[in-house]
Each structure stands twice: as structure tokens, then as C-alpha cells.
Image 1 (cartoon, helix red, strand yellow):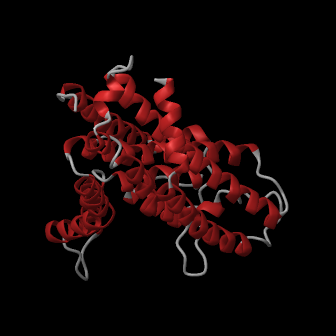
Image 2: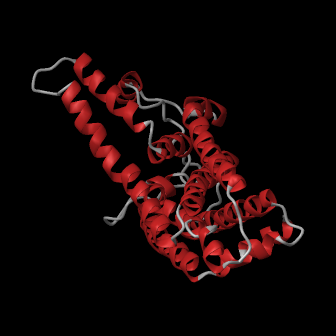
Length: 308
């Protein structure tokens, strides 16, 4: 499996499409972070979690780095996975590779691990560049709590992008044509990032419409229905999980938590408490990634491969 891993990793890091999407996220996310750092440049050393705000503060009309990564980051995972399997079938190289002393599970596991490693390298590089940019502009280094939360943000981001990688690999196995698998992956990405948000708002408006003079119970029901529908989106799960990590005072999306934040000043939570708040979201992201790749694994192991 190590031979497959290193070969696929070299292909990913050297592919033009990976480099293009990597620099797209780096340039736009870096520009947003630069503007946020300029806005925060007057902050004195000792301010609470100033480096974490580089990832969440938007400026100059650009979205925050967190919002940009949540929206466009899945494209990197899809790009690495949508032709991982069917391109080998179309070139007729699957039977030749598996004729060597390489088992099927080694082959697909090596491809998946290489994709995860490439995504981890990309995310780690962008985060380090952002931290270095903040160090240059702010003039003081991050503290231990900020480093630990940034590391957890990195882990969650890799898991999130790993879901889209496994989804691309799944469509690469199900569909024979690379164009079909790419279109299917992009369609799922658009559904979860755009249409599901509109659908959740539409359903919540129909079940619990908010009109002038309605009580707080109707508003709470409206928001709970919308949040329940959005729980099916990995994008929403990622945004909630990373928000709790990058904003230590975050208490959740519930009505009680929002009212508490609006009326009572809240103190920052330890990292462990922040993880407990979004533990369901973290488990959901890991489960989605694991289940998606497990389905790909089972389908590929049962597929008949004939020599050509």
C-alpha cells in the first residue's frame, strides 16, 4: 500500500488542477485574512484570541477564511476523487496494476490515504501562511490556547474535506465516465451549500411562519426546524463545529444560548468545553466520511475486474 500511497500523493501534488484550486483558496482566503489582520493591527498583545479572529473576521467585502473554506474547500476534495477509479478503468490499467502483488483493498486504501494526506498538506500550508501573515502584521506570536484551537481547526477541516474526497471516490466507482462523476459530485456540493439552506428556510416558514406579533415560542420553533434540517448538511456541521473552536465564547445555536450571549457577557470556554458543545457535529462529520468511504470500499471490492 505504501507504493500506491506515494505514487498517488506525487500525482496529486503535481497535478495542475490541485495547484489551481489550492492557490485559488490561498489567494482569496489570504486576501480576506490580510484585510482582517489590518483591521486588528491596532490590537495590543494580550488581547484574547486575536489570532483566531483572523479566520472568522471578514473585511473589504470578502468573506472570512472560515466561510470561504466551508464553501469552496469541498471542490479540492472533489477534484482529487472524482476520477480516482473510473479513469483507471477507462485507461485499462486496473487489471495490470492488480495483476501485481497488490491487493484490491491496498489499492483503494492507498488512494484514499494519499488524497487525505494531500488535503492535510494543503490545509496546513494555508493555515501556517495565515498565521505567519498575522505574525508579520500584528507583531506578536499566538499563545498556547490559540495554537491548540488552530490545530483542532486543522483536524476538523481535514475531516470535512475528507468527506468530499470520499464522495468523489464513491461517484468515481459508481459512474464509468469521469464527466458524469464530476457533475454528480458538483451537484451534491451545490445542494448542500446552497439549495438545502433555501429548502430549510422554506420548510421552516411553512411550518412555523414568522409574522408580526408572533410569540417567542413560534420563533423558537421556526429556528429549531431550520436547524434540524441543516443538520443533514456537512457544510452546516462544519461551520458549527469550527465556530465553537475559533470563537471560545460560543455557546451554541439554541435560543437560550443566543439570548444569554445577547444579555449576559460570556467568558471564553476551555477547549474541552467547546468540544463538548459541538461533539454531535464532530461525530456527524466523522460518521459521514467513514460511511461514504465504506460504501465506496464495499462496491469496489465486489466489482468484477476483467483483464483488457
